[in-house]
Length: 210
Image 1 (spheres, rainbow, N blue to C red):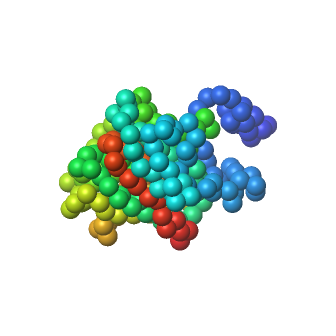
Image 2: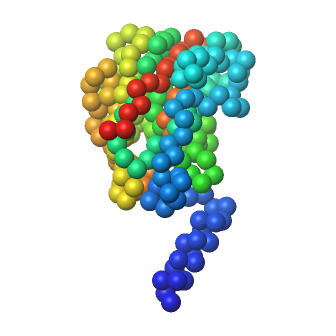
Image 3: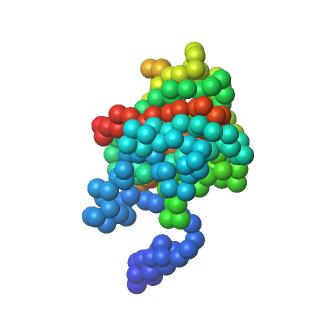
């Protein structure tokens, strides 16, 4: 009887509009092998300001814009395994830039109050101009590798078991940074970038399930 009550309580939470992090261990067989599309989500982005190319895997900030930054998620939803992908930062324009990911919620990813990548507690951003991993608006690890020039490659390794706590590692021009833990098991990850200067350009590439 107690088990049935707990099950009903759990189902009522899942069916409510209260936010909760998605858990891949609860996915149906239809969703278990659904990892989205490996391309930037150009929907509802300022397309008169941004240029998407390369099958929407490259984004460039072309024109002046009133916002100080433009967050751009991908359509990928990675989970249930080990993954690797790369962010090829083709132009940083001597400014800050963010590449990384967000965890997916039942209501969609949380960009935080300020709306940039790394502003919420369930988003992590690497800034190669400062050598920081940012989450919840704070640097959670600093003094890490920076780009030597205006461009470089940031790799992202994701270990996302369906029934255990996930982990991630950024790799900056071949140099591995300390591995960090995610807050939940069964995490579903949405890779993303955040452009902070006109002229910045990033390509996502080499998505591999390890």
